[in-house]
Amino acid sequence: MNQKLEEILQLALQTPEDVRDRTEDLNVGFDGVTRTWELIVKYHDNLEGLKSLNIQVEYLIAGYALLTVPEQLVEAVAELEEIEYVEKPKRFFYEAFYPADESCIAQVSERDLYLTGRGVLVAVLDSGIDFGQSVFRKADGSTRIRYLWDQTLKPTDQNRPPEGFGMGVEYNSEQIDWALEIPDPQQRYLTLPSIDTSGHGTAVAGIAAGRSTVYRGVAREAELLIVKLGVPDALSFPRTTEIMRGVTWAVNKALALQMPLVINLSFGNSYGAHDGSSLLERFLDNAAEIGRTVICVGTGNEGASGGHLAGNLVEGRDALNNITGSVSSPVADGRNPFLGVSATRAPGPARPAEIQLAVAEYERGLNIQMWKNYCDVYRLRLRSPGGQESELPIYVEGGKYTLQLEQTEILVFMGEPTPYAVAQEIYMELFPVGRPYINSGVWVIRLEPVEIVTGRYYFYLPSLAARSTSTGFYRPTPDVTLTIPATSAKVLTVGAYDSTYDSYAEFSGRGYADPDRTIGVVMSGIAKPDLAAPGVGILAPDLYGGFTPMTGTSFATPIVAGSVALLMEWGIVRGNDPFLYGEKVKAYLRAGARPLRGEDVYPNSRVGWGALCVSSSLPE
Image (cartoon, rainbow, N blue to C red; front, side, top):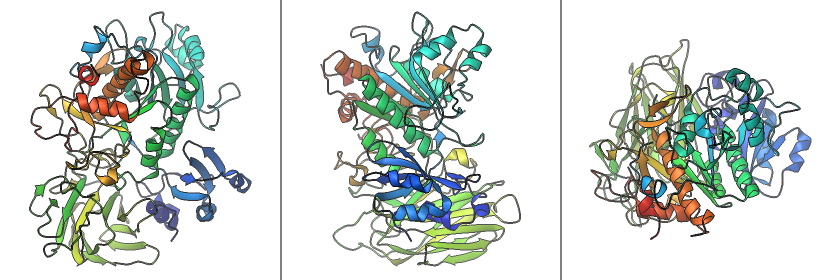
């Protein structure tokens, strides 16, 4: 087993392609035509020697790169000394269910100080933008989009990708203005064929920085960098690799233009240890420290989805106990939720637990992640809805194990800690055999203690966008339901509240809050989210030239991104504080956050330090 390959990639490489095709995630990153894998690597020195092996190399920032590798060479590439770690792409989902003035913005934008975001770049990485709309134009009719990179378009001799990248087409403001001069919208889009088919990106950009005679976003004079994220196929979602390309492009543009930058990421997924250890999380931490940059990420909409369950097998250490039904923060005792190791052994006896999972009808497949402390040894038994049961082996050579219960086959991968993560993953992929759907009903995972130090366990299902709303855990745990990459330490993590009731929105992904330690990295107990913004019924531009109420953390995040642009204008552009970027912006916004109804302790796992209040976040 190569410890430089992440576990889900190892499982994918060990699984035949026809089996991978029947799963939700194992084939993400594989091109069946060219027989290549798109991979994310952390490296040192350089990778130029790989090009002689017909391996495509795209350099990103901070020692990260994307490789396109023939399948038979993946293991050999991972063995190279200059390759430190390798991951496969994951799918990401927009955080919306298909601008409020509750954030003390008018006090600084509609009167003295009259902040508008002028001189600041707002980068929106999303589904694109309807660039012809008036909300994205200046008073003279010209565009406020400085650059637009559509990753889905095919390059031509006339329309090229950005320098250093091999996909999509980049347009500058002059090309966009030329298209805007064409009065016929249909002809305009034939000239510049970048289209936002879902409207998600248009809404997000409008909330962050839109302006017209009838609508004002938060930073109405900020300039826009737009990335329409590449989509592998018509029925899929953006992947990790497209996001990393987009962040690299935006950071490099801001450096070239010598302008402060806010990046808005309104998407996420639920795969991972949620501890900041994945390459994407660490990449964003590095990107947030380049130039004068702030990255805003939504917590996702998994708070009430039933997709997470955590617990403890040890009596007397009930930080999370799904058996009794009590739920509290997994770091309420001041320890890392995945380590949790004290100076002494467990205070009470360990007892088995049964995890009940409801699987809806017509579920084509499902994966289940279990994360635990490597020093804990559990015996796992899996029972199907029809009562068939199988015990999983505790140790498996090579990590992979396959079993079948009823008409459902289960791929199991027993992971190990990696050079970048201490948690151990047990991954289960369920897919149907001889029928279109896996067996519906109640599945039971029984955990029996063998050798216990902490007794903790954490289960995750795919994001709600990738499963039925009726599929979920009984007695789920709402804490630590924020999606990745909102778990990155250096990003500004945004939850949602309902401004009508001035209270937490139950769909908003929750994080964790350590009352004893509020600085450091996620593994040390940092509190997430950082704050909350309005996320219910947010008025945003739609694709029909009107405005539609939107709900989700997707639309709370650009309110914060636009607010960051206002602070950076005040500090950097106007010279009041030339160092107002990065963690300093986060500190100011936390300090200015106001309390919400029903929240007694701050920071907490639901709204962090409180609700966004821009006027209180500026120093007097």
